[in-house]
Length: 451
Image (cartoon, rainbow, N blue to C red; front, side):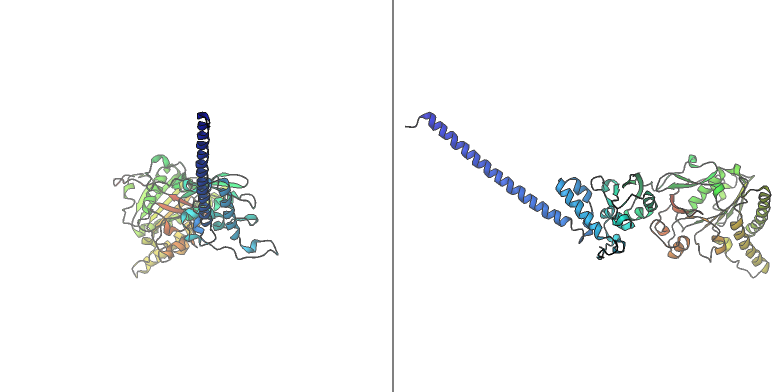
């Protein structure tokens, strides 16, 4: 006969068995769910990483890798590296190696979020037959941080810096090299400059023109007067910010009047542009509006240039250190266009003016002559080629016509296309070949007669 104690013990064993059965069922269900989740995740990842078919799926893979398991991170990295290897140009392979057709990608059809992962192929940077790639563990493209790895050889920081304009144009925004290692380089996206930067007097600097802010470094940019070429060409379509920049350049000159013997403002807008400066410096500044006055001025300046250069030669010096002469010509086409007359004397004087202007642009640098010419249209019909060719420094604002843009910049490349500039931005071409994109602050309106 079963005692009560034995019956209680049996019931306890049954309860334990039932609990084990339930736990086993729960564990089996959990394993099945985990297996199904793993299968679904693997299937998703396999589809997600078909870069060869869908290059746009590169978008966000750094963040995807960072939030997944180590095995998935490894799969993502392997697929990414295989895709880059597929894009190597076969002509760069070792002699005798198979030459498969490299993977082709339409870079400009890629969504912007996928582009950071193909910077190496886009820029053509592949030393040792290995395209530069992003470090998926350390890059955060959504926050403007790209860590570039170069496995085929040492990183070439200068090459990357020289390609920053192309990087900016392709990725959008303003990027800069922040850190360089033996095989890695970090690019960071800087905040955009404000669309409008109010002008402040402390931006001006002694001894130099203020040319606004470098859009890459976001630092003020200057051109020392002693390094200026004799001719500087400021060109841009109406509404591009050229007139605002003209006033800013004028303020740089006024802030450095102690370096100038004379300043001549030739106003092709019937005196409207420079009217505010009439009383700014009566002893040094003169405003001209009539064509004959400018013609006479250039003749005088040719004689002054010859005399100064002769003096410098006797002194064994190659350029004047001060006592500069500035000539600002607003809307140059007003003066260069052929006069509407048959008067031979007028036509002869105008022809002599064109010759004198070209001579000044060519020979005036050593004599301390600084000519700044503004125009909306840079074509030969408006600005003689002999004049434009000797303006070796250019500030190129937005130019809407392809003909105008190519005339100023040659072959249009990302980072050097004035058709895409926003108002107030300009490409600064210096005589040493450097090209900088700058943004000019906005000059305040001033009462007439005051600078």
